[in-house]
Image 1 (cartoon, rainbow, N blue to C red):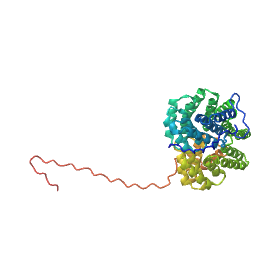
Image 2 (cartoon, one colour):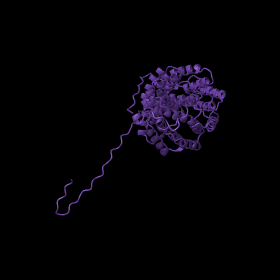
Image 3 (tube, rainbow, N blue to C red):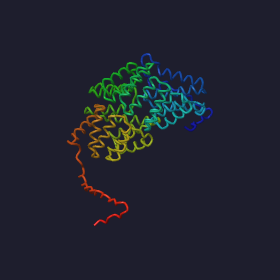
Length: 463
């Protein structure tokens, strides 16, 4: 990345980042035995007050604010984090080895959904300090979101070779999952859990293993992983939301709704609200209040620099204005041409009736090998709309094989669509065009034997 341009604060206008430790909100109780995040932020604020020209102190404060914002899904921490990290880069520029601040900026960009910028910061940090592994996880996910599966795989292998341990194993498992190697991904995720050294690291790896188990429809294992993760840290919104998905898949609707609400209390992410709305809708209720809340939250986060086009586009495709969704998702795909954006754009185009264009993006979303039930369902429905019934039957059936309960709202639609298609005709699909009559091949005439004349005599003329 080119040398970063930062605003030079005018003399006398330096504003120290001495905010309330919890951003003005009631402090959440930490898990038993875990250090209080609010206490850490208070200590870091005190440190930058005492040493305002210590670039390391500003970097540590910025990194802590990014972590707090991502964990609590509170985007108001991100502008504060950016100010702290850029202050660090003012005191010691990126070109002079301020690698920790560059990694902090990569993580901040990633948390805001700006994966191209996250990649640029991460690559700059890696070039300057190849042995500094902290940039690698950000790069792995950013490459995947940008549709560069090969770069993601290479970076995961490099991380595994340089560092090893639970973090490297977990991210390698993620790249295996994206390639469709589900059993290999599950084995590595289990190894990451066993290798984790701290309770926080183990909770993170248990959560990843739970997500992988859920994606392959293994409800029992997924619930076990999420419960084990929550036993180590009961205030994880991601683990609670994962547990809610499993409970919904198991038909335990009331428990699932309660888990979703708990997840939203700890980490108010728009996607959790949409899932709760769809759970309500699948049960015959009305999810509009949840969808309205999600739109409000996306707008709130957008004012803090978070890119919400993917989340809003998905919401509008299914529960709003599909034309608006197409506009949002075309812009998102231009920025981040990975499988998630391709699938979302394909589905939005389908909802507007442009199925020929939708098929191209649906193919992009599924071509890398990731066996995502929702992506397969979307592709199957698009192919059914275009009249490609054989492919539609295949992809709808595969979606239900991958995870029969991938969504309380959409899995029943997949089963209904597959039932409407019926069984394939006996003897294979009917030929659409009559075969062209073949012309009989011309008969080759046998070569006539050549008459050999006796030596010294002329050949005899044929009569």
